[in-house]
Image 1: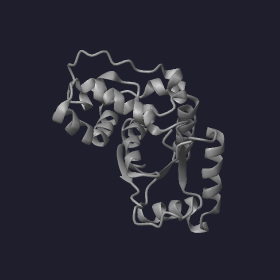
Image 2: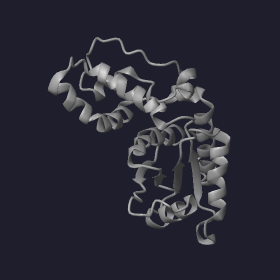
Image 3: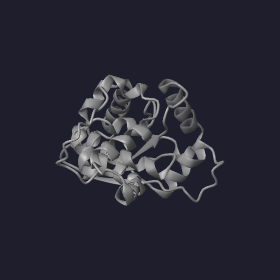
Image 4: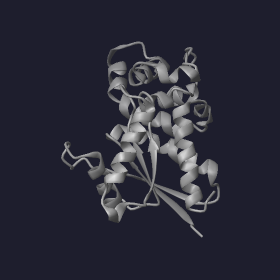
Length: 216
């Protein structure tokens, strides 16, 4: 019987580690009574021109775990095509790594879009949990149509802090990246994202992996 599930997140950049709280939440929805340990695959020392399959191999070698989550934003291509791209890379990896359990994490725009669901989490990340300014969040069915979710999350954090301007606002803006991660940490319930086909795809893949591990 598995007593602990360890997973690794492989993504394009360090800012994408904001997905970790969401992935842990998702695992917890399907297996409540087991310890969950996360790892961030820091491959920043690798040459940028390395192929996706090489990055997958390095993540599996340097960060062994039960599940490898592979994140790439869909951006200018369809969700289906991006997932297919990841699956082709997995098929090309060295035989010694084939058969490992992998899950594709592919937001239609950027991962920041999946954080635009909780006004309280945004206020708390802005150190203004009791603020009164009206934070207008997009509707769930609009999340995948937002042109620049990164800029939208930043705008909402600045609104939520309720700092008029001057040095305090400048200092606040310099900490935006860390505050975006805090938004992810402060979201207690990611279930609204289940309305999105891209999130449904992620959850369905994860459920299949957990069945293979005999945890679902």
